[in-house]
Amino acid sequence: MAKPVTISLDGMGGDNAPAIVIDGAARALKKYPSAHFVIFGDEAQIRPLVDRHPQLAAASTLRHTPDRVTSEDKPAMALRQGRQSSMRLAIDAVANAEADAVVSAGNTGALMAMAKFSLKVMPGIDRPAICTYMPTKIPGHGAVFLDLGANVECDPQNLLEFAVLGGVFSREVFKIDAPKIGLLNIGSEAMKGTDLVKGAAELLDKAKLPGRYVGYAEGDEIMAGHFDVIITDGFTGNVALKTIEGTAKALGSMVKQAFKGSLLMKLGMLLALPGLIVALPALIALKKRADPRYYNGASLLGLKGLCIKSHGGTDAIGFANAIGVAIDLAGNQFNRKVEAELERLGHGQPVIAAVEGAA
Image 1 (tube, rainbow, N blue to C red):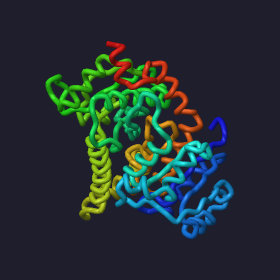
Image 2: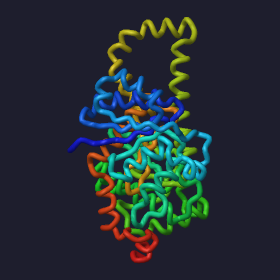
Image 3: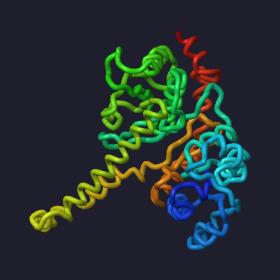
Image 4: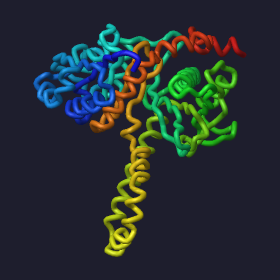
């Protein structure tokens, strides 16, 4: 980090909060020792957890609030009634410049509604999008994938905005000069796809982009390494992401079950043990590369403040990585770079105007 960064945490957001929030913050602090945390939530629950980590206790400020947003709360209701919730106050800390970024594992819809209301959107952006980094089969390469659930229903202009945001993210974070941008579809042929996809493709062909639009991307290409940015609507993106995560977990479980199989299998494992010991570092690296916890932390792109969404069911390792995303983006002044790039590309006004100007 170029300077100390302050991160506000929704201490009560997520399936296993507040324990994973506090344990995750303690883990993150080991990697980012100059970070400071402002933790919002029920002090009676959070204080004992923080006190178990003296280093975290010294680097944290606890703000008590008894209210929380649950996974069942509808976004509109959470926005109206959750003004004193841990999620809303953590977001407001960024809006009030008390923190550089906010991290929450809570209700996605509520987080998006509150963040959009409190932080506001960047000029030229109508709808923020949830964006994450997907590992690909090419070592050292990943694809920026959005939207992952913030916008279930989209129009072509929204997908164009996602392409701009994703392209800037790829350029600024991964230093790819001309990111290859793909539009998720059921085929590569021009006649395939919904009206939404076809309409977006027409806009992308004409638009000024921070990269180059190279056409349709099929589902099996998300992790193939052919694209640097893949865009889709929030419904499709969320289904695709959960399918990938579920497949990874299922394969891991199948491998474990196979090793615990028949006596013959166990004997074969025993005979192969010397080779497995030699290969252990590579196996550990492979496991980490395929573990979704190490890619946890989706950015809500297009907002004037940094907001990171952690998977609701993650553990301390996953939450620590979400905090790491927030710290890295804040330390690199990511939003300032995005706004400057949007202005340079002519997207300081509604994106559709920039497309018409480029036609």
